[in-house]
Length: 87
Image (cartoon, rainbow, N blue to C red):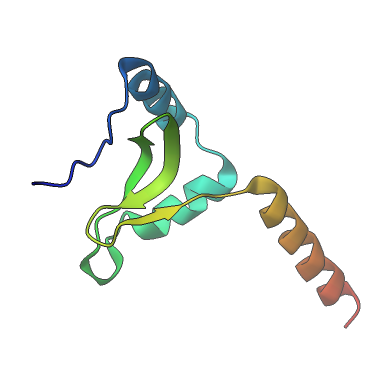
């Protein structure tokens, strides 16, 4: 049996994923600039439907999903800025 990449997502999920692809966050845009070059030959999809969810990035060959959590990215940026200022 062949593995399906969309895991029974409905038309609403596909519509929402298409809309999200058109409005990426800054963090998603930066990561996509790297992933779209197919690092180590791995093809990534962005805003990929999976059931009732939409994954930020997905590599089918690796069965790898990446979710970008903006709050975490912002905290990391703040920590780096604070560390830089204290040097």
